[in-house]
Amino acid sequence: MPEEIKPNAVYTTKETRELLRISTSTIKRMLKKGLLRANKVCGHYRILGKEILRLVSPEVEQKAIESYLNMKKKVVDKINKW
Image (tube, rainbow, N blue to C red; front, side):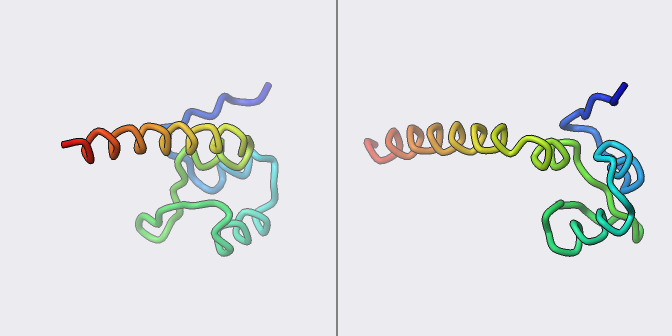
């Protein structure tokens, strides 16, 4: 049974490979091309769960972006009224 991907958890490249069921060369290629965003800590990549979820479910990311932009517009409109 696949493990649940936690949005705020930090995963290693090995854990990410296992979750996505991809090869080492594929994950390296994804990191190099920027398809998978990660931070380097002591020479090793660390990947946030939300990045993995973004890959698996881009429609979720799109909904989050739309929600953020909607909220931002409301805030800007409110500030402009001052």
